Image (cartoon, rainbow, N blue to C red; front, side, top):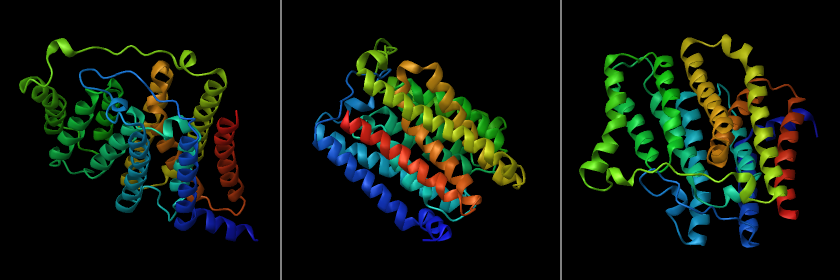
Length: 326
């Protein structure tokens, strides 16, 4: 089969949906064999963390899968509405699913990382809709209200606030009105929580995280770090390769790309600085890496680029296989 035909197939929606379905089937098999290691402990600031929301194991598994599927839906909307990739490709669907599958313990349950990979992309959608619209303060308010509200369940949501403040400047909407909307968005959820007596000042508690290195086995730790490291290197490599291409984009496209870059760098920095809580950022890392990789591979469609796609698929499939076999 000619490389050009393989390349066309690899970017098609049908192939990537099939790849995502295969990843979901593999996750179901992983869970059915009893390999999933549930995350325990309440890690919320004042409200229960997401891993406590669905106590029944089977329901937790299906909610986790649906959470990842919802992230894919938001990715589809981002590309359809804002033309983020500036090309026709569905490769990010398959890549994201495989990246999730490479850490099957996290893929097969609902926890803060799953929720973070829904909330932050949804906030990106709100932010991109505000480009040069200085009157769109409602979107800015809602964006920061979402981050602040979910921050009550774990502080990792709050870490993305500086990235979105920078994003407001990138979208050319940073002024006194948007600054006021930011402050109001941050304050409102906490005023409501305290005002209605849902929480009290005594409920505030910074969660203490146990290092992942002491919780899971050495083999699982190594495979987790390999998956995270490979996704990080992949994302940064494709960002560098995309750099010359994005310089030639128009102002709106550069601003959109800048929002994704700042979000990706925030994720990497947070994982490095907050390493005890690393697993909470893994799905967001996969979101950023799959979008960055697809951005490059869809705009540089040399026939031999299909080999890069095959390598990515093979590496993530191998990482899942190792965690199933070992």
